[in-house]
Image (cartoon, rainbow, N blue to C red):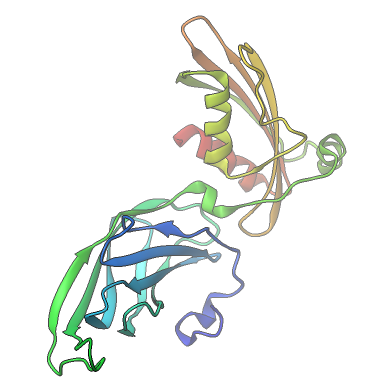
Length: 261
């Protein structure tokens, strides 16, 4: 990323997401996106493949509607000059966001390009092309995009050595859930943290469960989480969340993520 001039001022990359598919399988164009997370920027890398031999795409741009992502403002768009058949390329769109804040939102994506017919016998493209658009799936930036899964070898030692200075504890009602296991999995996925010591596994028919999580939050802040779950008759799940981190605002942020999740 740092080799692309438009993005070289964004500083150190915190993390890159796994690719998110924005098209169905077996469609004309195969597009996925990787979210690159920086302290105060997010860059979407759209990996594009043209699966139609008789077409050449030029000036391939992703038009992003961020009206449902209010804390993000578009800074730069880097189109893909040419996308021949079966030769992948990348287009980029960069956004600014508040520094160190786990800003979330939904982004609507439209592929816009010039399509030129290709003669299969010669491989030559026609001079003139036609402007076209292709609707892509929506993309979300979620709280877990700001967390790296990093385990600890001994959770109790890590918890004790972190100390209680920036500990935050609160209780939450998670509402009716199919099972305790489903509730545990949902919270782990929401936070994007690494389960420790096998505590992500919930034995069947359990009425209570404890789960230990570890991670590094944006800004390279170590975070440890202790979750205690309980379930009552009508499948209502309650959860106690204890967070320890190296930064008070990060401990608060973890609680805000759960409260709004």
